[in-house]
Length: 151
Length: 121
Image (cartoon, rainbow over the protein chains, first blue to last red):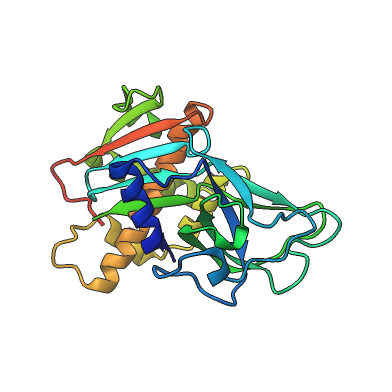
């Protein structure tokens, strides 16, 4: 399960048509299974972010608003949609398991860059299918995360 | 099979110097499905990376899913349409990643044009 939040759709429309409200960069953050993200999710505090530490920084990893970080754009006439992929994003566990406690990362979400992490607006969410935990020195890598825009 | 050879070079329409490619569905889906099936059939496992993920997704597909993928969608029962859509999406992602590899993962634009056959999900 993956999708846009309604807040994310609003931000895109605001940015494209009003040239306002777009962040300098986005972030990809990890969340546990305590709350499943959905279309009505607004901000990071609506979800259960995995704890900081052991290689995970609160708020996640920064993703620049450029072609390097959003590296594949597809215009799909067959399905009347456009798609964008994010470059591979990796967290490497250091000093112990990542996440450092809890059952693991079940979801990832793309957020804006509000200086207050809990206030960051959630643009899109991705289901990692199961709780993910990696041991010290191992990496949790999200590859070709894709967002789809349809009517 | 030279799957990526079916992608034609085009200019990035946004003028942002992405590596541009274009492919027609009538070529993309039959070729990508066949390429993926062959990889699975002959156990040609890619090295770790996105292609390995798509290969593993293809391994998990049932014979029925592969059969549905190349059948017309019109009149298909919903459960078979879902199977068909799963195969088409894995095939598209497989193809896209293979093309992206040819440009060393530089920023890329891909246009998938409609052909005469309905390959929509």
